Length: 130
Image (tube, rainbow, N blue to C red; front, side, top):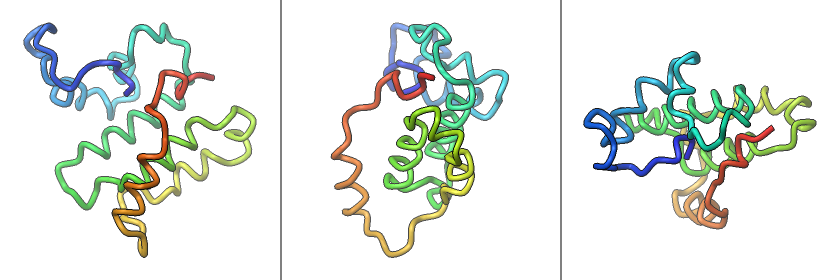
């Protein structure tokens, strides 16, 4: 979502064919994460939100399944990143830090999370806009 690239693209240079293998090392580095960002965004996004989206992507790529967020957690985090700037200032940074990412929500079934996640439109570049 943040790179604008396909998961596999044989038209890219050899080391960049596989999006996960190429992007994963950049996602956890605050200075290098911008190498992964879609150049078509032309820097028109919040750096804080870009870092949060990269951290979420990194968690989703964890080798350990228990560390990966549920789809419900992913949707909630993406919704928080999409909130208007005024709402962000009033406490969503706190909610992002304490959103429970990496821990499965107790009492919620996967069907519920899948159902809720499928109701949302496909993410767009506007997610990271200021």
